[in-house]
Image: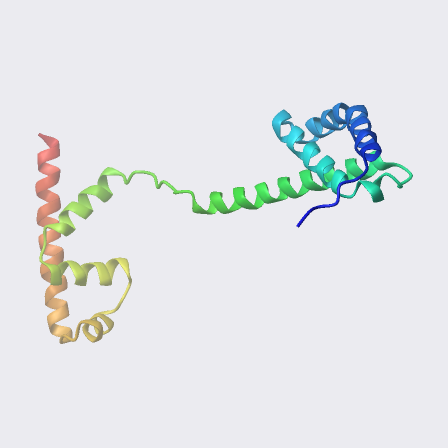
Length: 170
């Protein structure tokens, strides 16, 4: 399958058109994009599109305006795409929490050192704000058992926090 080539005169006409306008258009796109390589690529793409339609484009009142419009549209599309990508990447970026203060670290360490039932009961009651009845329902335990876990869990936490406090004071 062969592609019909424009007559030699049309090729020379396009070459002259390209040579007369490429620098000015590249300078304009450079001012718009702020990137020389990108401006050159956009202008080259616009001229390639003009070459593919040269028989039609050369008949326009101002063919360079058509090439300029194509290059600017390409640049605008590229800038939009870049903005979409940047917004997506910003949403994917890791967020770094500030390091917990010393009291929080001590509490986490103390919680890790008590039995799982006591720890769960204390967390559900004092951090999640559940009632004894809600904890009992969630854990499938009697309310008296949950109260016992809370009492023993608080006592164990107090003991562990006191020991840690005494170590830090030494």
